[in-house]
Image (cartoon, rainbow, N blue to C red; front, side, top):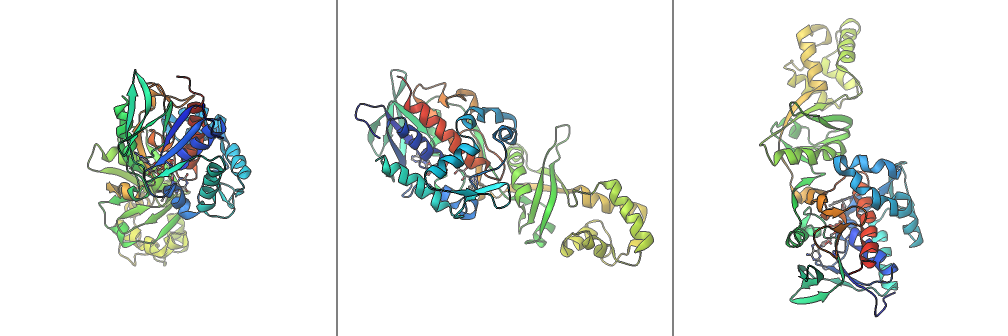
Length: 419
Ligand SMILES: Cc1cc2nc3c(=O)[nH]c(=O)nc-3n(C[C@H](O)[C@H](O)[C@H](O)COP(=O)(O)OP(=O)(O)OC[C@H]3O[C@@H](n4cnc5c(N)ncnc54)[C@H](O)[C@@H]3O)c2cc1C
């Protein structure tokens, strides 16, 4: 309920982080409003999970931080107040039941992101909280060393506390304009250069393009940088007209993009049969030679569950004739073939950019934000939530969970902020 003498809170951005922050602040009794630059709230939420909204997953909350990499511990306080179980309970209280058809990914039972957005907006309506659309916040108003409000369309909107939940810069047509970064910088915050993440990759090699549409249920991909701890991802992979996509590729793409920000190419090693070691494959080929010597190598590879077109490509990459039989393989040829299957080299020249990136890596540096409250260490009264911060997770509901959890924490803290 909005109470006349209660604290004025402005939330900038009506994505999942901003909407949760607004609800949390309203429940604390703050006089809160949410300002959104687009003509519709939650556009990215509506597009999430192909419209189904993979809003979290069934992993225990304690296992979430590790999935966010080096900075994952920053998530912990937000997950404590709104972890995956609490999020599902909260949505159930709003009438949105959730399910996990595969035991991992969690969706609303309607399999529609619109159900989630409608429930959040109804909760705000019930509490008579204004959701102001088409309002682009262009400045923070600071005086006497603390935040006094925001500036939008020439108007100053006073606030005792402001939650910046402006997202990143992926999918600009869904509101990913990166507009919040300049606001944070003006308040004295450092920015970690944003790069696209969860994004398809473009390869220098053209053979992946020839296989466009072919997919593998399991592949392993490694960013092969000499002398460093190698980053890797495993899962489904899809060949595209320009290179690679699919969960394994998307999960590694942030690290690849960060490397491409400094270098022209990123070297990858692709394992097409991640369940089989090089030694195992060598032994298998020896068996093929003895027992199935008249069959072509391409056919035998297809029998190992490689799609036929890919099996033919691997034979070609190994420098073998298309009809080369298992009996004809020499020892060096076997080694080359095993190399193509377990460590196929690829050079990534680009990502498909922010236009196709599901999230942004980089953003407002975590060093200047208090994890326990999500309050700015630079500007009293300023709070952050969601993707605007330098934190991103892999595919599988991690990023929406972070947006919801951080929104909840920031909204509560902004509402109880003492000037
Ligand atoms: C196609 C697609 C599918 C996805 N699927 C999933 C999925 O299934 N599961 C998952 O976990 N994650 C998914 N994601 C990622 C997830 O949607 C984001 O991580 C999440 O939306 C981030 O929430 P946010 O509230 O921080 O930012 P956003 O959702 O980007 O919301 C920020 C809002 O702030 C507004 N804004 C920005 N600047 C200003 C300003 N200056 N003034 C006023 N308003 C402003 C924007 O218009 C926007 O509405 C997907 C992303 C995309 C693009």
